[in-house]
Image: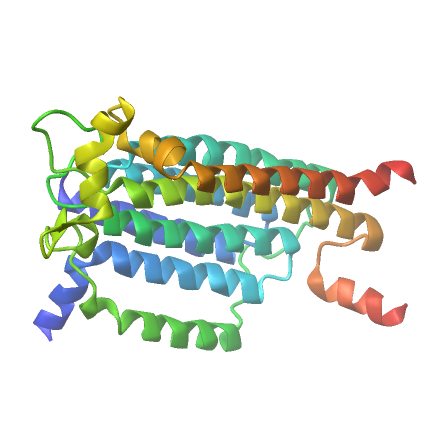
Length: 122
Length: 184
C-alpha cells in the first residue's frame, strides 16, 4: 500500500495534471454560465501544458541555454510546443468570448439553460 | 528547489482550479483563474521553462484576465445569493471515472525529473534524438544560445508560421462575430 502511494508521490506533477484536467472537464460539463465554461476550457488546456513541460524536465537540468560544456538541459521542444499552444489558446479564448458576447446580445442571457429555453420558444 | 514548495504549489493550483469551478460569481472565478495561471507560471520556473513562464505570466494572468473582464463588462455579471455552486453528482461521476482511468496510467509514466525519462535522452541506440540534436547543434547551426528560440523560429519556423495563421484567423473571426453588431 505504502509503495503504491510512493509511486504517485514520485509522479506528483502527473497526478496534478490529471486532477486539474478533470476539474476543467467538470467545468465544461456542469457550468451553466458560458464565461465559466470558457474558463474551464482554459484550465483543461493548461493542465495538458503541465504534462508536456513535466516530460521535458530532468533532475538537475537547467533551462535550454546551450553553453560549451554545460548541461544537462531541459528538452526545448515541449517548451516550444507549449509556447505555440498558449498563443493559440489565447486566440481560441478571444474567439469564444466574442461568441459569448454575441450570444448575450441575441438572447440577453449568459446561462446555457436560458438560451436553450429561448431557442425552444422561437 | 525544495520538494515541499513543489507540493505546496501543486496543491495551490488544484485548490484554485476547484474554487474556479465552485464559485458562482463569474468575477470571482476570473480572479481565481488568474491566480491559477500565476501558480502555473511559478511551476514553469521550477521545471526550468523560463520562456513558458514569461509567456504564461504575461498572457495567462494578464491578457486572458483582461479578455474575461471585458466580456463581463460587455455582458452581465449575474448576482446570486449563494456563493458556492451546487455540485452536480452526475457530472462528478463521469469526471471521476475519467480520473480513475487516467490515474491507472500513472505507474507507467517516468518519475518527475528522472534521468531515464525518454524525452531527455540524447542518444537512443547510438542515434542522436531530436533532443540530443537541439542541445548539441543549436549554437553551431543558428548562432544563438537559447535552444527554445532556435527551435521556435529556425528548426520549426513553419509551425510558428501556422501559429501566426491561427492568430490571424481568430482575429478575423472575432471581427466578423462582433462586427455584425455594429452594423445593426
